[in-house]
Amino acid sequence: MAHVRYPDAEEGASHTGMAQKPDDWRVVPLCPRHHVHGPEAQHSMGEEEFWQENGINPYTLAKALFAAKGDVPFMVQLVLKARKLFPKTK
Image (cartoon, rainbow, N blue to C red; front, top):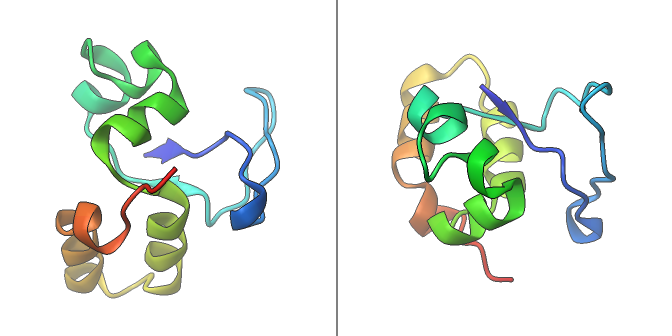
């Protein structure tokens, strides 16, 4: 799981540092290759750039996943269709 830490006033999210725990709704699933280990990984390129490159608004995705908690099949569909449902427009 990846915590979304960068600030976004429109989404009501202030910056959280590495030593701070973000709110529970600020989590999205990422495989190890996309989270930490690959050249296109979030930790390799920077968080905002990663989400921009992938065309996903992580905050709207995270909020939808948090609202759907417990409904795993629905949550899987949200993730699979994230680019279409939660486009990054900035």
